[in-house]
Image (tube, rainbow, N blue to C red):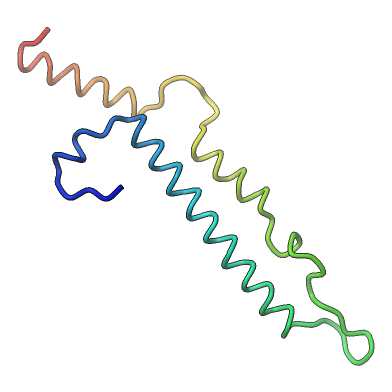
Length: 107
């Protein structure tokens, strides 16, 4: 989602923001996978180990070149922190909202 004004940004909830963040990070991981796949294919053509008859590809499988499971685990660590309780950011936002309410006298 592309924002064209600060008003649109102000309307985004924390849940919507997290969903957009997750989508964006997943898209970036997919692009990284694609870049590694292309690099692997290019390297398969050019990079070998050994000399003469004993030449072989440096990486026999793509999984040895790029570990996608590990990359996805790192992405999950970013998106799902270990503690299920509120993060510092969420608690700061809640305190800021309460402060603004008190300042306006909405209590």
